[in-house]
Length: 246
Ligand SMILES: Nc1ncnc2c1ncn2[C@@H]1O[C@H](COP(=O)(O)OP(=O)(O)OP(=O)(O)O)[C@@H](O)[C@H]1O
Image 1 (cartoon, protein in one colour):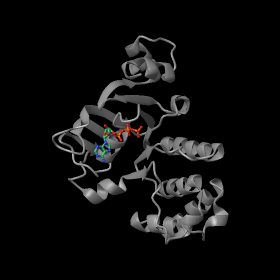
Image 2 (cartoon, protein in one colour):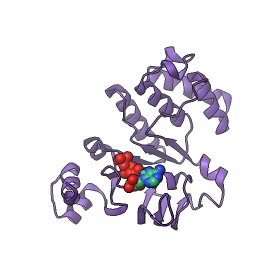
Image 3 (tube, rainbow, N blue to C red):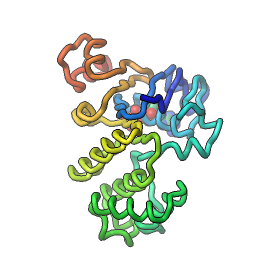
């Protein structure tokens, strides 16, 4: 199992004088889904911004396939696909044009692009909307466009920030089925979510963030052992470990 993403002693945040992440270390290997879990404000989105190269570490480093963002921006960017929490769409571009733009940015061959795009449109039930502009989409449809763009390319790493927000149950299932398929093909997936029952079912390992630090990490069995809560589910461990804030 190759190590794809390595976050090593990462300290970071929005102002040098006030870091919000403190000495965070974890990794994502190929063939696995890692759940990034934590209360509101724990630091999940900030960690993701550092992984995407949008923020510079104050200390420590983030490596994707052995390289930092600064060592090779283009390769780094092409090595991952990001599914944001808030869908960001171009209001003047149709659904199809969004897919085309993604394919162009990642240098996807025309026939590969068309084959994958048709399959995704069918699976996410958006085939009738290819000529629509985002202003006509519901929240969930906007999220589906972001997900389809990410699934169009086959990067080494997927980073998804709260991907289920706004999706209907069929959309959630399609997304998760695809993630499992990508994982089988050798991708690594880092997924932040508050939906712990789903995380428990799909993630191979968990990183539990709290106040910008890693509180626990490992498989469910390892978390249970670390928290001394044998047989507990992820919800129970999470509530117990973050108790002082309630
Ligand atoms: N743009 C920003 N400028 C300054 N501080 C920020 C900014 N965004 C977030 N923070 C702070 O960074 C800390 C971590 O926030 P972050 O958004 O990473 O949390 P999160 O775990 O993603 O939370 P949520 O579950 O609510 O999305 C919080 O203390 C927050 O106030």
